[in-house]
Image (cartoon, rainbow, N blue to C red; front, top):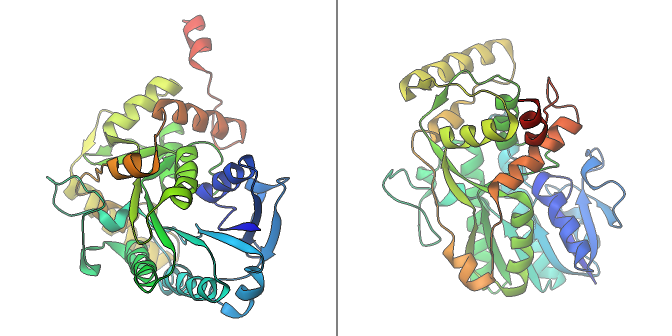
Length: 341
């Protein structure tokens, strides 16, 4: 029997695929034919080619599958046609849930996002008990994931063996695209962040998020949500860590939120006129108005989830970006820098 991983060529999906293989599982990966599969090249997996928006081929894809890890997502903070995000994230999830129900899948792990739990209350640290509404979601990506998560919860209530995981912001090697979180790292390392806003995120090693998916499949309660998080850090604190690890200087300029919002609005208008992707995503700035801090004791208590060192994950990410040509200048490790000093 197989474990099926959708979005296996993505950041989290590729690490999950590797983890499942390491556990001795047979893995089938579901990708689109035109997908970039460098992240899973050479792995002993069986490929299935389908588009989740089209339910026609899903039944054959699920033949011989015992567990489904639905990791695939359209993770963009901006899209020329926002409806694409809803089709990929909501319609695709509903189609896969229906096909999995008909196929009698033993366990369905849905990868949501911690964004569906983040309140606009700056005093509250979110957890799995946080219950929000669609109107609380900022931007098309978060709204689409909220709707997809609701579909997963509805399926669980109707008897499907669905478990939901809510990862925070993953860091580590192999972020080929890169993700919006990876883009923050790259912009810092390439000296393209002259200022920062006073916000914060929860960052987590991507390898631990991958293991958390497997733990959810093994031990998760049907219909439950589990935050797969790591450490709460302000953006300034994150850049200080990156500066220490990479030797890159960090800006000491804190940009007021109103200025950042104005810059994003200006960039958004210019982008719509020029037909290009905005450099400063407006939804990203709106999300940054409050610190997005969370806690994940439930996953630790019920799943045995234990996130590792964030500094080590950052070092792995820096090394990978450097080795794969993402940086303007090669970064020397700390030992080499200390010897030179």
